[in-house]
Image (cartoon, rainbow, N blue to C red; front, top):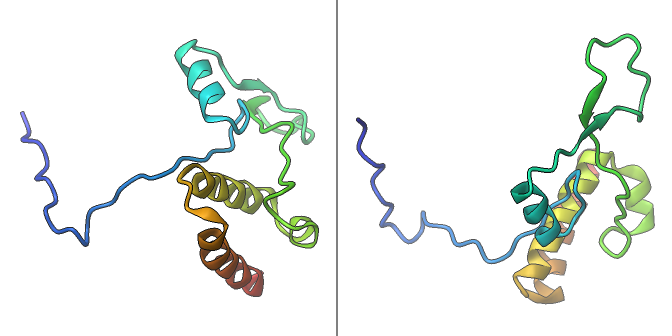
Length: 120
């Protein structure tokens, strides 16, 4: 039997979760996501976003009904792939959930978005 990992005591290495945000097959609402998980609902459906005839797997978890409106401006939304859009929206939802305010969101995430767009 292994001992439990040692608890971190250095305050610079500890983290605190202040907000949650997600984008999932069940939607972007934390309560809906959690309740569907507890109910044992599967988010796996037949894949219809691309032709699967050349692949042995025909099912997967697809995010449907996603909207980045209010989180990403239209110009950047067109330039970003889905994965980036999901990450940015989930991150901004976490900041909103943490009630850090629009100022914190502007200073941190928009700086990150600008850096990400330069690399694209």
